[in-house]
Length: 400
Image (cartoon, rainbow, N blue to C red):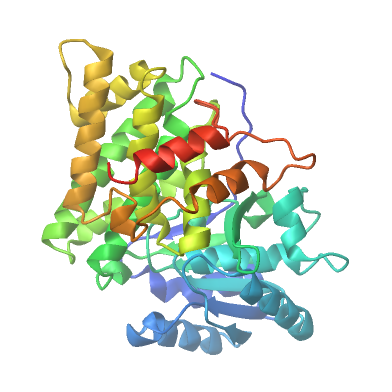
């Protein structure tokens, strides 16, 4: 196990009825005299009544706010820039993000960009400096998936260059987050599946590590994965199962607040490869991950059979007579079976990608987007992947 520092400032209000605390918590953490940006996506929070509850709560506390809606999946740099201009004009001191991971990521990017008076916010994503300051962000989670409600990370897509980049800084970890599982009852089945895929991938990126002697976090990862799988299947049967939603809401936050990644080298190759797919083809992030992940597992299997076999044994209870290679293959097959049960795609063709014409472009972007000298920066650590490797993984995923 490696040394680590861990600081998590997020106040977490979890459970039935916690949406009703949004006014109280905003006043406590932002102050009654704050100027708040209320940031959200499309019309779902207006249709399900969440918007009305939040607006009444803020007005009831005398909190001044301005609105910025319009966030879409794979949140766009153009809206982030619009949000930065609005925050500067209105002297915004606090951002309340009401929505899923895309809304929260957009809010964090705005929060990072407002103090950057002498530079464009995209420069932060490309160069990854440490932030000197940022506006505080708080969240009301309406879709459990990305874990952005308690992480310091954000991912934004630049529509012009068709690049999707992530950035993280502790100043972007939300100051409070409300997770009320009753808000999840109306989520469509495809969004449930995409969210489950995303949170599982956040665990995989930490679990598949070369760092030895991480029994505690290995066990935590395996336990959370088993919980997600069982709860997700329960939600396929009954989307109003409060207990299953509570487990999923809890698990999604745990998957990405980095508790499960402490003391270990992390990978993030699958996320890097998927970002290029969703940047060009605008597919759902979770759907892209369910395609890339099994192909990546197959590609690294020969070198990494022991850890993949551990996953098969401890998450799915599978074993092939002590043979790591065969046990690992069984585990990959069971993961694919689970994805299919959830209605997720497992091939590029199922994503609507019927040829390999963009594979080399995507692979090059994955290893060159942050390069200063034109040399490839490999994706991942569990097994370092250069552009040739990534093309092969994309092809493995084409008709897998």
